[in-house]
Length: 297
Image (tube, rainbow, N blue to C red; front, side):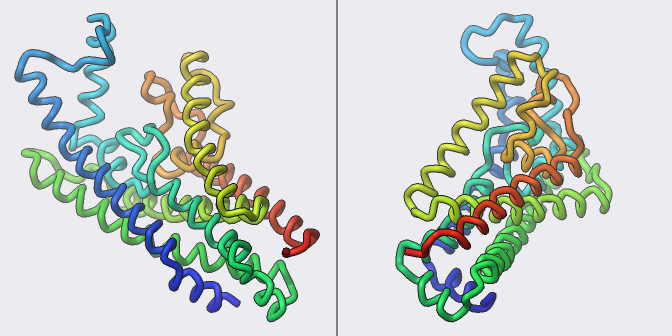
């Protein structure tokens, strides 16, 4: 069953499109991150300084400008972790939902909803009557594709960091081998869990359009909720950090929106990874129950 599911993913154009978009998104994030230090230096040299929003008060600019400069410092570990981040969530690991995150969710959704849309789930169930084994094979296939995409993203991140260090006088690698491998290992795990999260969503809703809309709504709504809770609480509330996409970003880099306000990340990377795994298990478990109890057509 696993090989059959891998064949489906390899021969489906949507899989390649999702992978290509994830890689393209990583390239855009890397290019912006590489250019940001130059942009900030040019702004300072022109005498304009760094501005925040429109007509920001001078005291706000004075307070936030050093933080922005530190985030854009190539020699800082935070900058280098951002370059290696497989999710491409931005400097400090606290930006909006990364392109890779959405792509992995869509990969999982499309892996199961395509079968329901084309009717391919029926012959699959005739060949393998155990619906749990079908779902398990799909989980294994999506994990394999997610890992493959993750390896490509890791290579792009390493190349981007190398370019940043080489083109910045006096900069060097501030991360040890354990730190680099840790960022990559957690990033790969997050990509797999996000694909399984999407697989659970797709198994529950079954409709391809409904699955894509659900992913889009999640990607748009969750950052708004997290940002609102962070601003209203002054970065003191950790409740919104338990939402799935925020957990993915936190697990990957250890940074959250609260760190931009000078606070500490409310959860550790391993705790965030465990929380994301719980979300994936919950949705996959719900999808398994739905797949067993509901008719296929």
